[in-house]
Image (cartoon, rainbow, N blue to C red; front, side):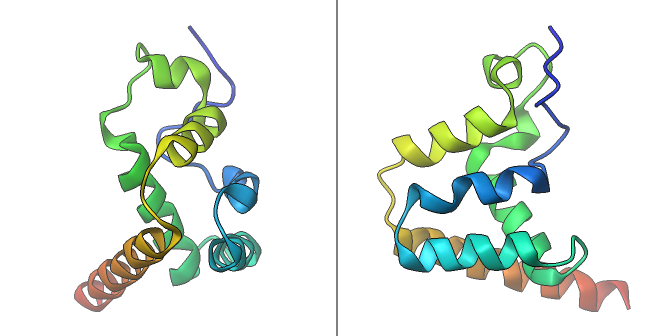
Length: 107
C-alpha cells in the first residue's frame, strides 16, 4: 500500500507537527530544529533522535507504521510514550554528540 506520507526515515517536514506534544523546552527544540537548515548539525540531531525514537530503521512498506505514515507514527509514538520531556532532551543531546563524532570522523 502506498502512502505519500511515508518516507525512508523520519522526514524533516514532520518536525513542526510535533511542537505541542511536550512542554516548553520541547517546543523550543522543535522550533529550532524546524527553522534550521537541513544540513545543520542541530537539525540532523533532531532527525537522528526521531529515527531512534520511532524505530524508523525497522519500518518497511508492509508495516502498519508505514501504512499510517510518518506523521501519524511520530505523533502516536510521542503521545504514547511515558518518557518525560527531560528524557527526550537527553536523547537529543546524545544525538548531537553522535552527529559531532561522525562529522569529526569524516574530516
